Amino acid sequence: MTKNCNELGVEFKYLIVNDMDRKYGLWVNSVGFQSIPANSPYPLKNHPSGYFFNAQKGRILREYQLVYITKGRGLFTSDTTPEKQVCKGRLMLLFPDQWHTYHPYHQTGWDEYYIGFEGPVIDNMIRGGFLSKENQILEVGLNEELVSLYSRALRIAEEDKISSQQYLAGIVLHMMGMILSISKNKIFEMGDIDQKIEQAKIIMNENVFKDVDPEELAMQLNISYSWFRKVFKDYTGYAPAKYFQELKLRKAKQLLVSTSQSVKEIAFELGYNSTEHFFSLFKKRTGFTPMEYRSYGRETEAKEE
Image (cartoon, rainbow, N blue to C red; front, side, top):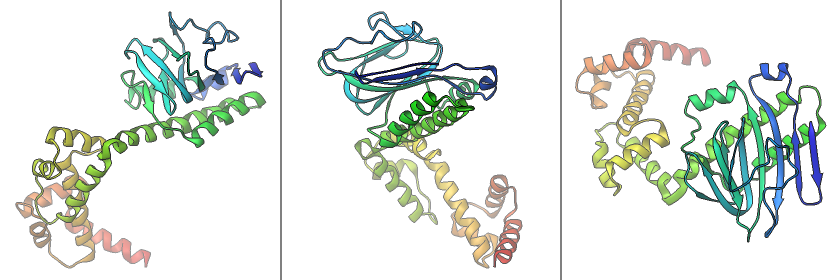
């Protein structure tokens, strides 16, 4: 493990990875912090050859990296991302075998935290679509907990105890989950998007015994339907019509267990075209017929009492 720490506000570790570490499925190669003052050269020259790069020529790494900027601003470019501004609160996601470059503005400098890692666990995340080369600049804001995770990773790497790689892998997964959650919700917070979607959800809940036309709902919210449908699905995981049907199904379950209404009455009350349609849909979505669900639900309630 290579370690460096000096008075310039630079600290980094380059770790040795053994075969057992690789069996864990995720391992950390590098972790560090750099405070680059205004009017200073960048990047610093005291890094191993595999990490040092010329900002004009760029570089290609063999690992993933999460580079978090907490002060200052600069620019980022990659073979899939045109030149884009990076400022405090933004995080750059670097991919292995991808050309990229970044640097702070000379007049501002910046503070950067970074951690580099590899493994099939992360490869599976990429294949699953959780992260993408088309979205390499993530908006996470200034987050004390995220900074503390980077600091903890630096400390664990420095201590270099047995199973430190597994500890570091857990920190990386914690970071990834936090970054994904924060960055996705930041998108919805911008321009009160989240308020529009929450308003739509409330309207659907209040009208669960009626019919709600998603296109009319978008008009009511004064937004285009195509935009509304896309953002609603990104926010909830469901298209608007599908979400409304899930609400109806949830209400049907509640009525089956808590009332003595017949299946026909519940289907009619919830606005289904026919009892047969309700029966078929309920069985498909739950694996139970309505009466089976009623019996099962009441038995469960009785046991809990």
